[in-house]
Image (cartoon, rainbow over all chains, first blue to last red; front, side):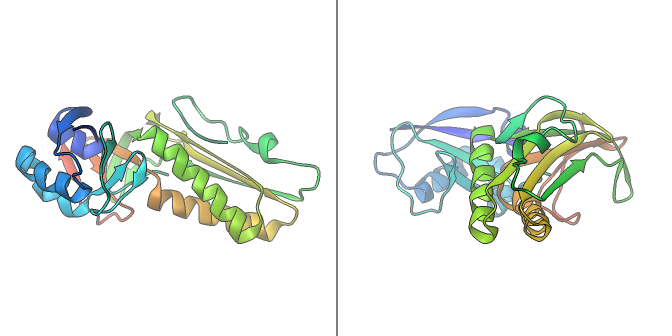
Length: 81
Length: 146
């Protein structure tokens, strides 16, 4: 299945794109996606511990099951205000 | 109203919107762009947001202050894009029948915004540009010489 990845702030600078489609096995979880991201984007390795993830605009943990078309955002520590 | 905007924000932009006849207090907080960060001089800031999620999380903050203090009228505006020194980056207005609830709720709302709303600022100064990540000055910064 295909999901959409969104990159913001420092992650966008590191990866070089705002968004991209990403191919995953059906029934993959967010944890599975994070595992795949390590090999696709090794340059994000140093950021991983600081990142939160959102699935369809809601913070999500590794156990969340993903579906075709989901929008998954990599969220660096926020600094609004 | 909980909104991400690219337009300049005036300090009274939300006053009328939250005020009702039964209110006795409107508390407004404006976050503005400071000319320094620690020892570093700031030239301007660039804000970016995950706008859909940011508006949703700001609305959740509205629901939280409703639950905690019975506040029915709160509005939050956050600007993105390039902001110059002294310009308003975020405006929060809270109205209530008596002052205490509005003061507490406004303080809570800006603290929560800095915790959970997906917005990021890049400080641009003479030494380059840095994404600020997290609330603390000691937070890891990512250098970017663009």
